[in-house]
Image 1 (tube, helix red, strand yellow):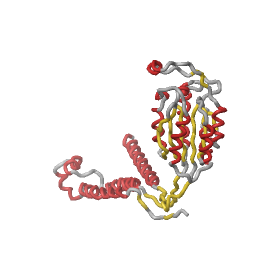
Image 2 (image 1 turned 30 degrees about the vertical axis):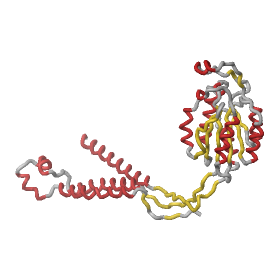
Image 3 (image 1 turned 180 degrees about the vertical axis):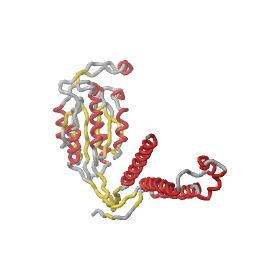
Length: 344
């Protein structure tokens, strides 16, 4: 059960030392207030020159005290606000997510096809960005694959680090034609098997399905029997498009043959069925990635981190900030009023 307390607490109590600045300011003001004992000096100088000669101020003692109290109240309010007054805290049990998802992103040359704008790969990268933004309580790893597979990021809770890598991913990284999902599955299996079996473990294939390898469904079925579900996000359209010709240095090494690439929804759907996952065709809405995350979270679990608790305080510094604003507004209004009266 959460525990509460009404004890006063400051988030940054070192700011309270700034209150001591009021002491030298008060002493200096006391010494510069003009005393009535200076009456004889008036015989030797004009009255309007005395404040400059004696280092005193024009205000009477009572007005000086009022002025000092106003700015002292303003300073005290600011310092207390910076110190961060808080009370009424709650102690909450800490939990750790046990859900892991490894994303296999297809970066083969067929992902350059522009049957979805601006291209399949751009759409796939945006889908991955949506997935990272929507993911909660899910640790994610990333593998990019074509003819070979590369681990871009291990399974991590720091999703912002994966988000920073995304702009650097490109189909230009591929030197050889072809897309081999088997190698990506092997690397993804290595990553996901290192995660806790107490939580949900899943793989996500983001591809256009332009690969023809025997035994894929059987491999994925074995993973599902081990408790690793496989989901698929299809990129492209059934009508497809022609794969763009590669850059000149690559074309000089390997003869180029024009290829028509189509989204193979039936193949990708069968892969998802074998992995006891779901298949989604990418669109311009966020529902496709959200549906995949919902499917991942159906088998989610969390565990408590021993007796670790975090204390959540109710912050009340904004009341002091509001008081400071009111004091400043009243002072500005007073100055403007005096200016209008003096001009009148």
